[in-house]
Length: 216
Image (cartoon, rainbow, N blue to C red; front, side, top):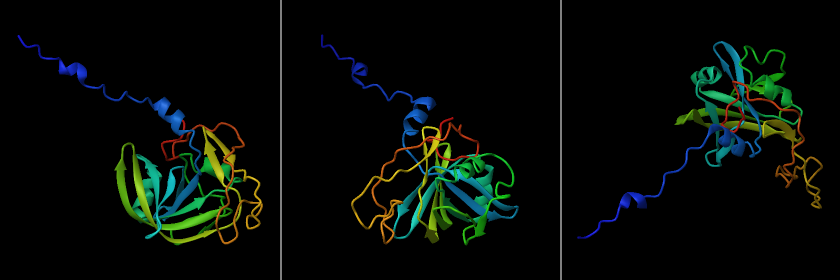
């Protein structure tokens, strides 16, 4: 009699389920730069805090944001088809918190300038105006691709978010004479720096913050 091996025991086990707490803990160790996404809608200017913002392409100039499904602010912006991105400075952590809350009229009392994509917050390190190129399903989020139509920037330090806390970027000392004290290289290129974070208190993830790295 020929024995047939039990091949079911040779099948490697499938990947273990990843818990939401473990996912947040690990991804929360990736420092991100909060931005404010805003637009002019039929009901007035609206905006929300977003931590999942990144460049996609240089030619054509494309960026992407990750937006939580169910965000009522995003639903308003989507109907407009264009948006603005304000890259926050390290002095604007209060705005990151303000626009992260599910409250009405978040721009009331906030200084901003009209842009081709929407409201551009005063004091931000950079502004980008975009048209919405595509909205893609991605689990419990959407990945939104935007085409950059206008942009500007100023010197300063960025706001960072790391493990549930806001902080700032500390440039490393450099002997390069073309890099100034803010870490900026003459001509617009950025010098190397340290991603050390000066903590400013624990901030639990508010309802309107998008991006999966935010601790719950």
